[in-house]
Length: 142
Image (cartoon, rainbow, N blue to C red; front, side, top):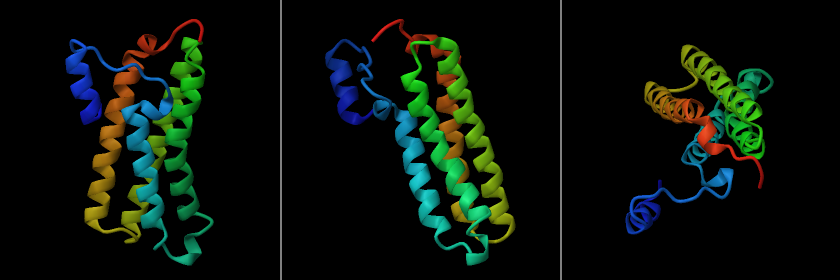
């Protein structure tokens, strides 16, 4: 939750704020920040990587949030919702592979690698909690 949501939540007796959109999900916000950082860093990859590593790392980083958005739209159907959350986690794991490739090729620094790994770990933990409690996000109609 964001700071203003925490204070509002405290005023509301500790209840969490209602999520109106996938954009309100902390995991989506983290995934979006991550994709933007990946894009920024990958601009410095060698030109010969444009249609391979650069494209792959950008695509998989963007797919994390895209699958979260699609999952949100499908939460009326619990199995579909969980499936899209799983797809998002799969994209995160694919991204981890590309980040490992980038450091192995010396395209990113150890500090950038560490930052990416920390972000991916945080996103993965949030996705894991969502998948473990996916039914709490689902409702029959809206």
